Image (cartoon, rainbow, N blue to C red; front, side, top):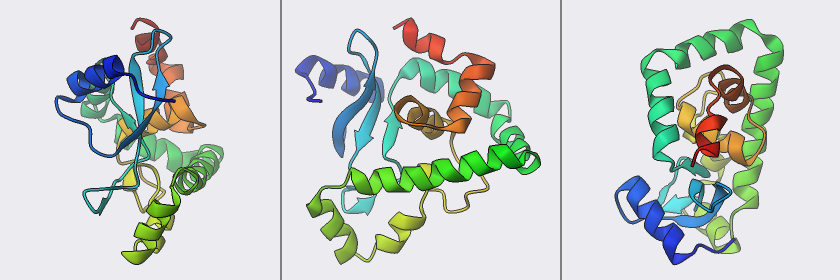
Length: 169
């Protein structure tokens, strides 16, 4: 999907700067407003921690409020208590790693290999997290949910109806 000048202007307004490492819009509203960006694996010669980056200010604000209320710790506890949820969460992490590789260009793959980042790239899950029993950032999980299968993002929609914020754009 190519990015229009109007969409690029919206992205600049959403993130308050020029986007670096932007490869594509991964998810947009029906009217074309970017919601999730697909990012390059490396930005400024450093590993970028996420494939999908939530750029919607409304979603960012709503999710930040949930994080402030301690939802990350609550969800981590739920993962520990619910074996089925943890199994799905681990599968999401593995699928995410594969999606990052699948979205790499041959040049990206060569850069990762040349810099010795292959093992890190294979072990960093959603949001650059190495311990797949924890949650680093609900924003990244929700962005992943809008582009693929993510049990945490799905849970957020089921319990907080964040998807309604997208429909209102």
